[in-house]
Image (cartoon, rainbow over all chains, first blue to last red; front, top):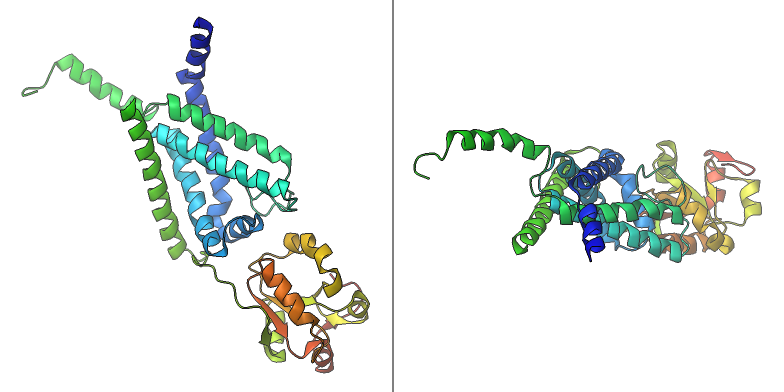
Length: 171
Length: 155
């Protein structure tokens, strides 16, 4: 029983959360970069998976990189961190599902995961990073604080000042 | 616990809404934006000789030769890709890698009643290419007009 508690405590350790937040944040921002600059190759890559109807492909190609960017920034700055972790986990789950579906259908396409025009063909090895992001997203969603470091550090001095001066009149 | 779950869901929804708003705004303001509602042009629309030549010169379309490979070797529109109608299924992987679905395509055969260009254009549209047109007059009229041609395997 105590061993189980110990494992849970380690999995929810704030230092692990911080490391995962920073890694997932950098990964998401890096993934969004090329797609933000030129959404058309990403739209073609999304189209290659032959999952979405034509009418939704361009909307997805426009919105998804911004979701990656905003979630990545939230993870790094510590703002709304559990929500950003949830978004990262959902993105990773969607990417994993699309990859597995394409591989099982034998599609000879590029991953479209980072720079959409690299030309490397999709393979099972592309799954690992998505699964790692999924695990990181779940950990962050469960363990991170809503306002987390470094943003939480900015609130620290104000709290300490309030404590030092006592309660303000009328409170 | 319930409060934390509510915060998590609310902040995830906020991230999505803010990102969607930023994405739509940036797409509307960017020169590299994409049309938000993608539409597929009906396949098999005809394109005339002079308009097709204009597309070739402006690099506005890729030309697809639907004739047998032997005919392609004997002479084809400069820069064209050979996709013989009978072998189209085997070429799909190569075409997907080389031709973006948004790339306008002009398909041709021997003109007149040859029919393979229309059939290939419908197949290409069915496989996701959005703007596929058929050069009505086909290769013989193009070559007779003195427009750019090439021989051999080409690209």
